Length: 417
View 1: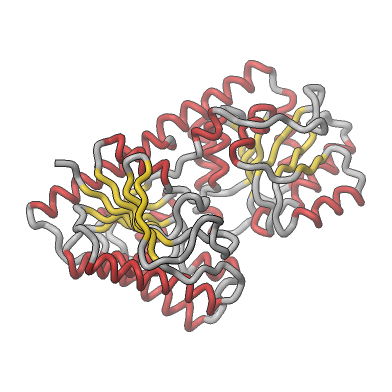
View 2: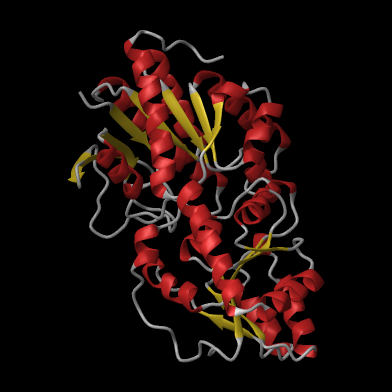
């Protein structure tokens, strides 16, 4: 009899999410029976997606996955009160469903953020005796403080206390980096309760990219270093403009291609124009289905974040996408993300927000021979396949699910420690 897994997540396809339908399908392929309990899609804009209407309950069956959608207050603006209503409304509806309507699963997988999903999963665990695997993608309250979403010290203390309550009650905590693991151990979570499972990339979109490159994309006479993704304050991309200015003085053939949007994009573009940085090209965002074509056309791929203790234990999702694309990485992030590149041999690591180091590393890559660059790309791809891929990650989740389900059947699920 197949092990029944409940995926409890506030966000799910068609919303952008790391552990969505791709994960659910892979679990079905492994032989699990999967139900997803989620909300009506409204992230990231806070508006319901076309074709959806809030109902008490909506069920769909997609590729062997049962998807159950429950009501919530759709919102994702900067209002703290409205954001809390968004989180709390889904927590309430999923708790009611989980306690009174849900066919009892063998194990619950709960996706964090938001923390309220962890509270719901813990209460269902307590009252229905179902083990919980808690997947932490954002470290709360640290992220709330770092992003400015929550600044009140008392409120942050309450969030921290609720986190500790959830950590004690779930059976297994999965984190995305060794740094997250170290931080939770410092906060009193037992080592045996923690496991690192790296996130994976959107492999299907990268494998068969759609669309064509724009005419403005630089030709092979330039060494094209591509940054693809959000351009916000966390990315600290002024350092890239500083590096471009240094390279321009050296008459280097390196150019930076900045693909994407974000709150800093317009300012950065204006700054580059004002400084006459003809070795920096800004391109508008494209759908994920087209990003692969840009990655494949680049000579190297850039990851950059500002200096911050939180980012030292974070692995930006573009790291996995870049490795899956099989191109050399230029990693301008300190900590765990840099360590992945060092372990793989798939690129060059520089100190975050160090324009001089970034420019020097860019020139080293540009001076490397085609064979050396190709070898870096192959090593990045090999490391991805072995450690970061969907197949590798889902298999490790599957092992945890089977172990906890077997313990439940033997009557071994007790309160967390």
